[in-house]
Length: 359
Image (cartoon, rainbow, N blue to C red; front, side, top):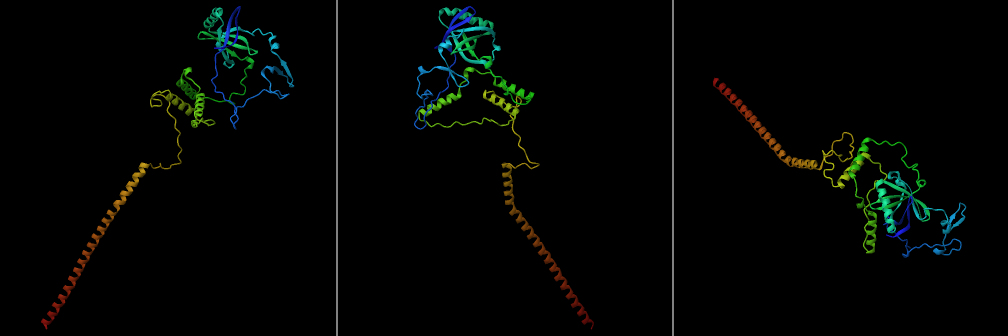
């Protein structure tokens, strides 16, 4: 790795020649600006405001702009004459516990490499002293024209340095916290703890930039002339008022399923069950018929319609029987009436014969 700064670590009266190497790298994908009409690249040129002519790098210097707009030129020679003891030195000023360093102060990270064979012994001495003390070193150093604050710690077998912001460069978090008093219930805290336990730990090496990979795939597809399909956008749920308890419970279940834990949400496992919304019903309305009950009702109606003609035929036979019995009754009456009339004439005939005999 290429060094970006050469100097020495000042450890009391011990001086350790070192080289400063970037410990991180930026994998972000950079784009160029182009003219949409013809695809030509857009470039920025440095032009003097007075004569409106383009200026080369060797003709450009530094200046401080005063409050009234006056430019005060500052040369590199002016800066070099300033009393800056850390110009080429990382000066250790204290050793403190690591928890005394506010993570908000963390800035860029560097590796410190021993510069030459004579530097190996004091370099190893400082590294092992930091390991045994479980402390970090606070130091001052100068880089890119300004004095900075740094923290030295051990990473594997290398001394690493984190650039730190000065304490007065950290803003106070005023007006950032939620307004008003917000009460959090114990049940909500318990569910939050359960979610934290379910998510557990993660292998930091397994984390990667999904967006950068998607951009790389997009560039490769466009370069090969393929049609790019728009990605499905998920509902982020921003701005929605949610049930915090239900959201936490569902999050626990989702985390378990994503980790492949069996029996997530099963009865009797002592875990939270899924939350389903309760549908509102109006008044005492009867339950809506299901498809099965409707089909059964239709079948019974059809069967009743088929059986209706049979019952009608039975009624017809019954009426026929009644009519035949009525006819029989009428015949009997006629017979009795005819027999009665015949008996009367016979009596009259006997009476007349008697009268003739007596005469």
